[in-house]
Length: 360
Ligand SMILES: [Zn+2]
Image 1: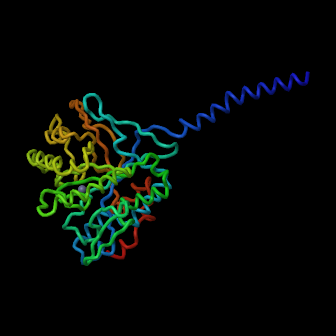
Image 2: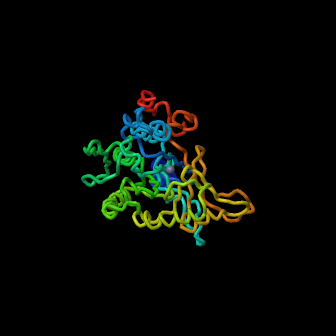
Image 3: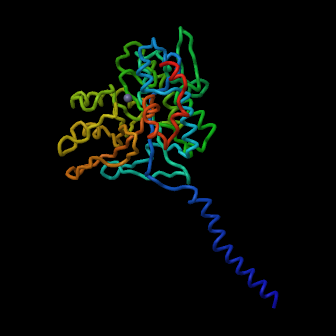
């Protein structure tokens, strides 16, 4: 009799274990580890002030501009640490939308580890234009010993670094914290073309060694892509969208397509210079926007500290909708003046580099 009771309880225990415990175990090992969301955050900054002592020198005619528009390597490293601590993870901007059968961009949910928040990082004006050389930024992005590095020339001496620009700092950070980039994404590099890309003088205005520069930038582009970076168009000449004529815009796009696209490949992401956009004119899609969408751009990025990823225009009379994503600006101005708004990402007071104050 006792034996029967024991067996009875044993069977109940087994059933309980099979029905409740095992499935939970299997569940937590797969689907529970990830979720899908289109609640996507996007932060952007510019090239870093790799040599802040030069950038903030009062005799540097760029110092006020740099203090407002840029951050230092220390600030960028501090920001990455806090983003990581606050559970953000990097995702690829190209995973956030898909083209439908009519070629229109449709918002997609992205896969994210449970408990993490998807974040895109983008970096504007990665040109290192010749007018800014020796003013505090690096000269160019290079490959050194098969690794991404930067080069700055001081009095004919080359300074090679692997930790003074956003690319290298983020590369190092992800090596230390691979879970910050669960699927291998790094950031979006927003390029213009008027003075080449990534510090290499690949534009048609270079009449001396353009072919050589093109040959040298190719392995840099390949390495960046292999390491999870992607590219966006930030126009060719960094114009104001509201001021440029349709004719000039067409020419800009032509220059982009003939000078930059052959190097980096096609991109569907368009990042407006100055965050200045024009999608409608009256009750219709603006002809200027049509030029951009005809060129194959599908996701349009503006600037706004509040998270926004949706379709524009809101005007119900306009049937055509455009996929639009705002990016919160991280620069000297917002670090010092919009601390509250940046709080969901990091504590600006803990991030700021003291050199900023010593130099003012
Ligand atoms: Zn820009």
